[in-house]
Image (cartoon, rainbow, N blue to C red; front, side):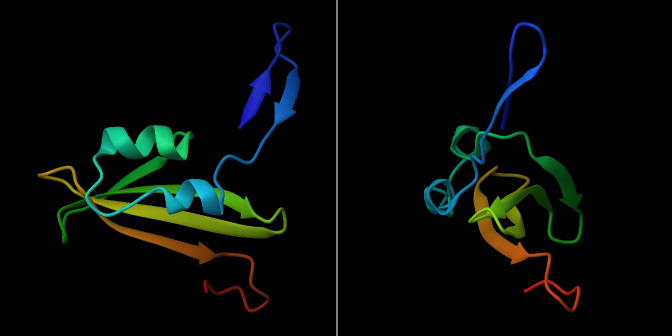
Length: 96
């Protein structure tokens, strides 16, 4: 998260996605419950195959690992179905 001052200059940069905030996410949560827990605007995609809405974020874990977080919602009910995290900066270029 980036905080800007009145002069639009960067005042603070904080990592808000962490093990603590991610651990608060659980299956069954609504979109409205996930939004404040993540505290960042997600990239949003859709899967027609599974009838899902998929939110994703990139973040740094422990200040060193580039990670991706995905939460998948049932499009009809809006309930959170699945939470997944992947490391994206592995030496072989593959996700873990």
